[in-house]
Length: 354
Ligand SMILES: Cc1cc2nc3c(=O)[nH]c(=O)nc-3n(C[C@H](O)[C@H](O)[C@H](O)COP(=O)(O)O)c2cc1C
Image (cartoon, rainbow, N blue to C red; front, side):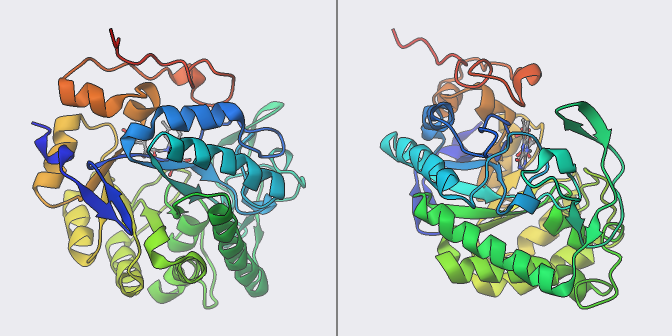
């Protein structure tokens, strides 16, 4: 039933033994300076049999941070921390793409290193609360980025991609999903600009395309992936014309020949099929919450080339072996998803080897 998962494939220049990918997952266990630790290296190396691991969202700049204790990739110490992680993953036979995540308005000043007001396409506060050191707080009205600041933010992505390669990762994934900065530009409600970065479909997709072009130009298209979540309302996003916007986005990105498109399936089967048809390259599909048989079927029907798994990979360091042999899976412990120590991080048991 999961046969489709086990044939070799490729993403960019990477040769992969099977079709499973570890989905990006924020774990909030970096140092206050945004440096991944030895424990983080152990966590990812334990999961190296997943083949391609996409890291937790990692901020390209101080403005890009929204949550407590997330890692960055814009200081020398952060680069050194990620070097430990990539060396450990490579030594264990895995491959690592680092997810570049700029949160935009999904932030709170007390969670950032410089304590500044969040930035966004427009000065529109998101609904919802942000967890801070003093408990959950409303997210403030963000400051609208000026055009020169947007261009500087594109450069932040470029420099962060270069830093990630310096840290030894195999590539980067641009986070254009789940209501963070790039997704905010694509949306109707967070982007109320009337200049060249808003308004029309061409305006809304401009920032995403410029980020992808800058990253691909810097590190090579074969080392650049992008994650989108069309129609996903998470983090107070509204998209009235997701089909039109994402079709335009994919047709602008297709000529770049990126390593992969990481598509978060939002439940709209027709839209997912249309976007798959519009993408000439590799598609990694994340059908959240689905069982493994359903995910494997997405490869059989041609909707996906690879499938990413979040919770299953978090809780099962030896997931491919368990799935191949039909062994039972550990259950993810939600209480230890974000923050804390090794518990719920590096202590999920492997199958008995005796
Ligand atoms: C603890 C946790 C943290 C997550 N952090 C991120 C993240 O940093 N970036 C991202 O794109 N998605 C993030 N996600 C979403 C997952 O990548 C995935 O889309 C989601 O878990 C649904 O897929 P699944 O059923 O395979 O877990 C996170 C999910 C979880 C459970």
